[in-house]
Image (cartoon, rainbow, N blue to C red; front, side):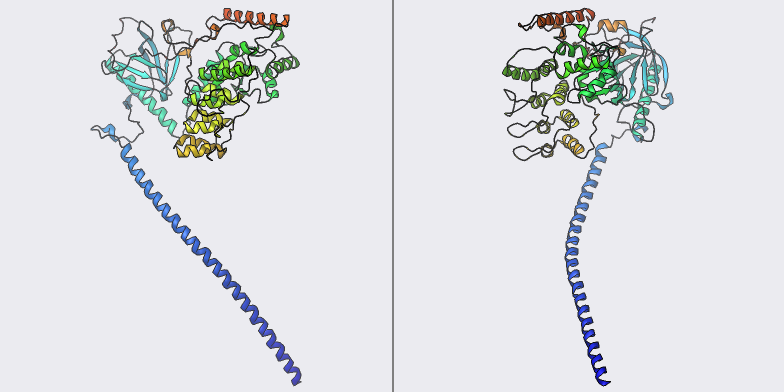
Length: 570
């Protein structure tokens, strides 16, 4: 029994030793984990300290900036009570609130013609718009968005004031001084109301000025020569736009355009889609007539074209031949080197129809130009970006849509995106980003377009590229461009229409007719003469084609002499 008890004691001690060893290993592992955690905590403390210092510095800078902005935006102290108003006034004229925001009555408006006569017109202010009746009863009144207008009283005559819109200055004369004060107050109050509505996101705002501009451009595009009928079949009132070609088609032909693919034609609806002004650049500068003069120049007979009653198979055969195979396009017969020089000349002269002619001849629009402006290997798109301004943005848009390589690099590795960031061409950059140009390509010094914009502090370019890289870029965007709308509804009388002065767009009909013929075929002879006949017939049908009146510059400023008193009878 004692021996048995002795053996059990040994087993007990062995088990106790094993337990001790396991506890020792456990605490050693805990100690090692604690040491690792200590190192992490020390690194975290240092990082948090750095972050806290940076936040304190940013907070200090923001506070300093806030104080600077407060002092910069603080209006000059005035003695009257208007200086203490808290409404957002933009430091502009403040109207007398007792007159309200709506008024109707008669004002004398000074015409823009040679005679500068005062004409009595019925005017009304309502819903933040001013409507001005025409002298001709059957014409719709002009409608001005007061949000984008400014009212200025005359310093010489207390009965006179000016209304300045985005493209024209209107001169008005009231019957007496109190009536003039009332009109100025109502117009100013209505403008302030429109501004408050636009700034208050909780209230349903009206149509923005950009939307109004888009609608005006679309209406102007519809009135362009040839745009009253489909570019392919002649169906009336086409409503589908090819944004990369600048033409209008009917719904049946637009379906075939979609089948061809976006590399041939990008179709959008003028009425169903929400278009940005950037998508109307080519439509405003090309049009059905100008396009067909080049792309259908060698069409043998008008009977070859489908009609509004043609079935889809006939339409498809013609459209594929016209756009994909380009069978009917005018051919210059020039050498490749001459075509390269013509490409550079077209971009330098900003002639979109010369560019369209080269496109119709299947010239590679991405090939290097013979005489680069800055770097060897420049393509037409590089040159167009360098020369771009508010009047030539459509040239960049045509090349962006129709060149084969949007990311063509010069010998220094610069793409068109690099050029935009180097020269701060924000409107061109919008068009490139809309077409999904590559923003990650680097030049020979390892810089992307974003790096260049950041280095040169071109903040707008930097923001646009960051939006594109974060998938926040608006594809239906607005661009700053000289639209030069005809705006027929803003001419208030026949005198104005007859006496309008200003430069007009050079008529393309004055270009010499192409009598180029292929000597090997009688059929080609007939085609060339048929093309000339169609163009002559088109000139007879529309003798006033493409007269684009620029905004009139003959407007009176506040420094000019006061207007004469109104006539004794209207």
